[in-house]
Structure formats: C-alpha cells, structure tokens
Length: 145
Image (cartoon, rainbow, N blue to C red):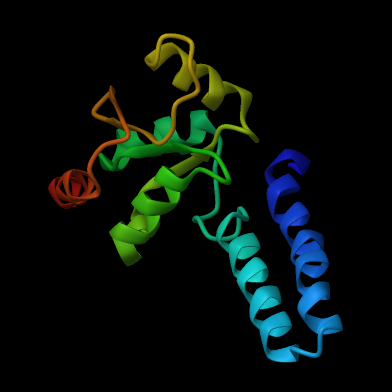
C-alpha cells in the first residue's frame, strides 16, 4: 500500500520547494501555478485515478463469470493511466488488479511477460496482452457485454 503513494507524496513537497523561489521573488502567481502543477501530477500518479482494485483471484472468477477483461496495473504507470483515460467510463466495467497490492497479480504478470512486471497487461479469455491499444480493449469490452 505504501509503495503506491511514494511518488505522489514526493511530488507534493517537491512542488513546495520549487514554488518557494518564485514566491520569494514576489511572483505569487507563478508560485501558485507551480504548486497546482505539482498537485495535479501527484493526483494523476496516485492510486485514486484508477478504479478500485480487487485481487487476482477475484478478478479471474468474475472474468470467467461475465467475460470481461482483467487489467493488471500499478500506480505511477503512464501506460496504465493512458489506458484508463482513453477508456473513459467504460474502464469501470473492467476488473482492475493492482500488482503492488496483490502478490498473486504480480506473479500472473511475471508469468505472462517472461519474468517482467510489464503493465498494463490485459487478460482476455485467458490470453494476456501487454500494453494493448485502448481501442482494442474497448472492443473486447463491447464483445463481453
């Protein structure tokens, strides 16, 4: 759990340090803009942006029952964020597994990727797909509906 928050928690004080210089030079607008930028970066890299994670076992069971894809992800992953944002509201219909919270999920990703924890790894009908195109994932989600 703590590992997922390292980057966002480092961005907030870093933004404060960076914004101090313009603030001391009498440029409060620049200081506020920098603080907002770092806060936005912290928010985007936090686990809060992606849907709530479930365990790999739960995701597998649910996927077998409803046919929806399983997405293995981790906080701070730009490709996972891109997938999430490009899927829009449809992303909530997928089963999301945070590999930093679930050791079984991390093991499944390593097994699918030759020992690497490459994410996002999307499992559709038991077949893993590494960093697939969001449009392809949307098609798979439509087929499962």
